[in-house]
Image (cartoon, rainbow, N blue to C red; front, side):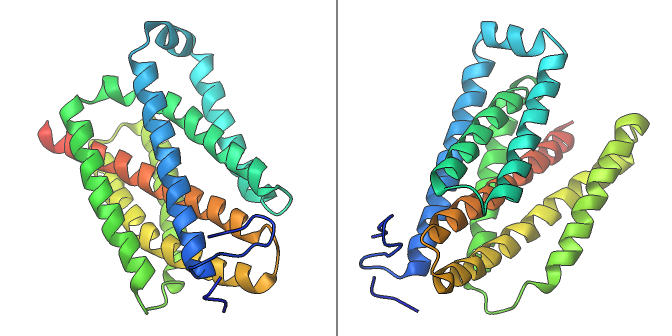
Length: 239
């Protein structure tokens, strides 16, 4: 590996740091930027009567926003090999903006103290587990299938409980959701390390940028979901 080469878009090289360190720095930078966009959008909408009227005054608008989010995520994930890093980055930031608009609803569902506590807990937990994934020598790939099946399970259970409204099932989903995204944070961090190594050996001039965006998207989704499940858990414990 090349450990002697700041990143140059034309040459796909880093100066003074390793390729791996450069990619991981960009992953966390893009993730942080996306979280700031999401938080800014959520707060802005929550404090704008005009925006609230537009979004929640028509039941079709939230559904359109959700569909738009899904389209952006799937489009980015499925089309990353055909997209330039610039277009991929624009789609990621647009997704984080739309997600912030939809998440504005948490300010009306939960008290501000619970939101702050959940965010702090999510940040500390995420940071710790990402560090584990970054530094551990243990191969976490074996957990990938298990975590994916668990994720599918809680999605199905959540859909069922939308109609059943069972409090016990909701509690189970919430606890499992927290543990799922704690595990996914470590798993995805290690997977991004592997993607970085593959990108370096591929020689693709756009590989570093694509890995940075896809890695940032994965960790962003882990953080947001961990935050939301912790928010539900803390709110339930305060009732």
